[in-house]
Image 1: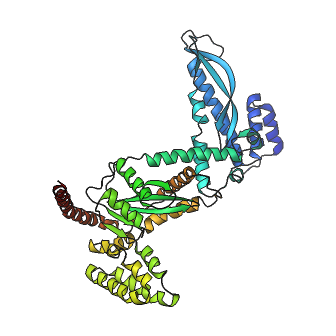
Image 2: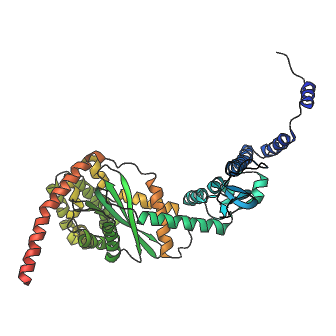
Image 3: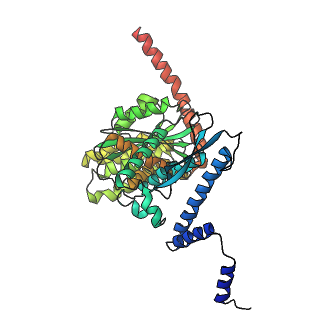
Length: 436
């Protein structure tokens, strides 16, 4: 292959000189390329954006310098504008148009698209939830060239914070306004998270297809009945249908249990066996814990409800003399730790629903997202961060283990609710007659 000499290339370049505008553009691209490929791409992108705006102006106002009696608008100079670029706001020059009849300025659709703050707020939300603090946010941005960096705005700590607050407020509103009319739940899980002096109770739903859905949250000072009742009432007001029956999984909180009974009625309730286990073992000395733990797990693992309940009662009676506190903890809500066993839930689905672990997993995502927060200034701030963490967890959700058996669970729950409802109505009528 014949080699081409540098002198030959230079001679050809001199003979076929490029237009001055092209040479200037190439010179800018060469300078941007020295700062990196991304900076080069940004320079090209800004040039394309200006070409698009000029093209739109020409389409509306006609070619520049040519009279057009049919045009509906005319050029009206340029003005300074801001567009979103690489998680920053950059100053650009935008053309203006005014209507021919003097009706006012016409919007430039191309500019409005690039000027939208949605892309910036989305990046801020994702990076903040990933653990990037406001002070370090600038250090995580991609290099876009020195010229663009000098024009960048909305990158200060306070600006990033304001953007995050606005975005999480929208997230909270979106979560709390979700309609639940079309959601057919098989399981409803309720748990709480403590953020400094504030307690946030959250609800996670599991559909009959095994899909996990964050349903809502409520904030208060402690995990009390009023707080939980407010959350459940809000879910019902948004269209959650529990008349066909739903299995409610809660921890060992008496307040949550009372709230479920007050708002949802006599639905089947599964007490979290992990919470119950910790509550019992905390009343025992270290030397006795391994043996009691084995007996508890052995009873809960059985598929025979009556036999499992007998083993728990036997263990409680043995502990009553030596460790009455542990016995009382075990006896409180003992039967409800075996609700799913009584409903005929087996294998993988039983292991999934015997505890609030699916809901705890969502709460852990909230804790991980908010780990950089040093000061919780208000309950509204707690709600915003929790809602953002819940929806971030939703993006990572998969169907629960054992979801294929959820249809059987739903039928069993519906059958039990149907059998219980007439009894409740009869007692209410009897009470009415006695009162009369």
